[in-house]
Amino acid sequence: MDEKTTIMEPAPSTAATPSAASVPVAATAATATAADTSHPIVFLHAISRRFRQGRSTLEILKSVELAVWPSQSVALVAPSGAGKSTLLHIAGLLEQADSGEVYVNGVATSKLTDVQRTRIRRTDIGFVYQFHHLLPEFSAVENVMLPQMIRGLKKSEALNRAAELLSYLGLKDRLTHRPAELSGGEQQRVAIARAVANAPRILLADEPTGNLDQRTSERVFGTLTQLVRASGVAAIIATHNLDIAAQMDRRVTIREGGVVELE
Image (cartoon, rainbow, N blue to C red; front, side, top):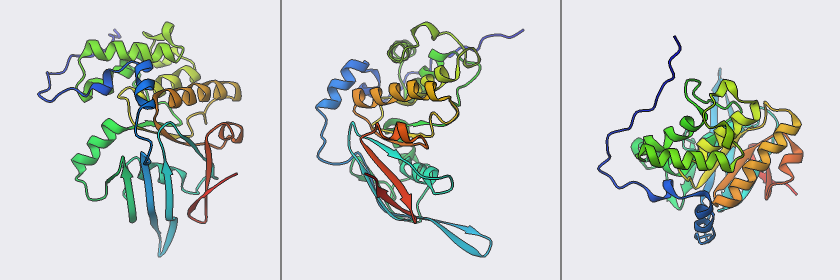
């Protein structure tokens, strides 16, 4: 018999609950407007990454420079194998560069401990992938609740924020549906809600509409950019879709290992 998995309330945390995680969508936008925009939220400085391939060395990224400010969306447009995913992984502190520095909100991250880097990923960075990676045994609202509860939010508060985010993204009538009961576009919108559930300052998306048809892609992307501008996050979005890229604030590519601004 298929029993629905339920989320259990975590033990109360002794640390203060981060207030940003419980801020409603509208209030988050107001907070972002008043945020300090004098420095970039994420800054990749002189980033290089190399991989061994047999006896040779393959240089994927060479002295990359890229800065992104609050409420700014940057399209990363480059062919497969150019290093888009590697760049996003380094920016998201999932992978170490061979040289250079990643600054997150002005903090140099290369000298941080694994615990400190994990804390930044959990609180300041949201990820959206080409495949939604939703947990199949949980409903849409439960998938969005989980990262908040892991961070220490109470179940009731996580539920309220998850429901609000999903409603904001047009999924008010899909809160209790499991991933298999949602369309591809709906699954990606749940993934977007999960990525921003903890009110991150950086959003990294790797081909978030790559598995969707053109019409659904445009709808999901419109939702994503609306949320970026409303919440004030700095977003780097890798895409092959030039029409989608044209709607973003900036467009960059990877050329001969370096990041180059496009017109």
